[in-house]
Length: 364
Image (tube, rainbow, N blue to C red; front, side):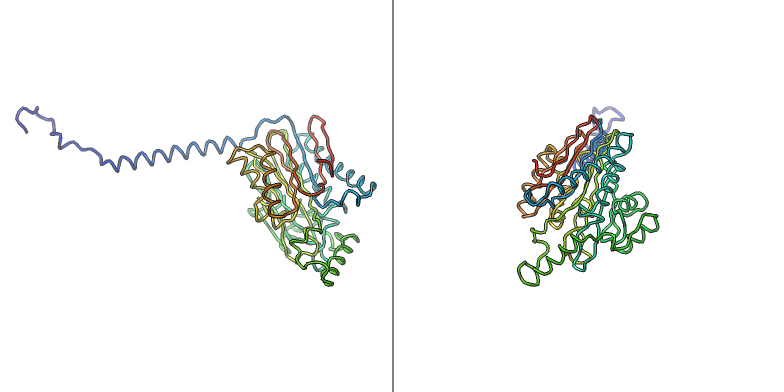
């Protein structure tokens, strides 16, 4: 003990102080834990259903729209009637406190059963003259999703996609396995001939004849003259939950086994209560490369864009720059709707709880 130093008091040199680098490590760990807690809390809040102004349903029947002077009035009236029936089917679900998922399925089934659209009955035919169908659905509440692709027997592929989501741990089933799954689930199956209509058969014959005669490039991806159609729906229910679904027959004269964006979550279909619900239509290869549907939500989530600005950016800038014919319908958790497209028209419609109803083809 030093002279004059009280007994029991250690020298200054004996005080145990943690090294600076250890203290810094401790604070870094604490900071990371705090940041993680804040992030988790924010995500949980964002995923919670948001109060809305009422239920909303938006549908599309594809950008495969003939030029205005090529669509006879009677045919246009038939399209408008079919779109109206699809809206009515979804409205019947939402107006009785049903879920957005059920409304999406109900609306899309009507269009799958109509020979007017490129989905289900009336789908475009592949190179072998067979209809191969794709569909997907997504629940914005918990980001659950399901899809089927390249199926040849399922009457309503959107129903099969829903069963994949609800009754399996998978997201996507394809080909014969998906058809077999639908059979096990008790869903209606149809012979391949059911899906084929004469108009699609003639379309395929014309394409293949022109390719053989070298009047047309043998490249089905860039063959923009063969306008593609797809059907889809997005909905917001009374509980504030969003859902999206898409169904298609794909491109005419496509290679057997080709799968487009309609079966790919994030490409042709996406839904998240925190942002929006999206269904796309157009040349699927470009939607896949651009992750188009998810990109709309990402622009809202990460850049704070409005629904309209995000959708416009993806369709009119990103996809158009890629030279893709494209359109989307999108709906956010506040009930805002946007339907941008870069073609002459897009079959589409919407209905709200307050009674507002709209069906359009060429009108912007």
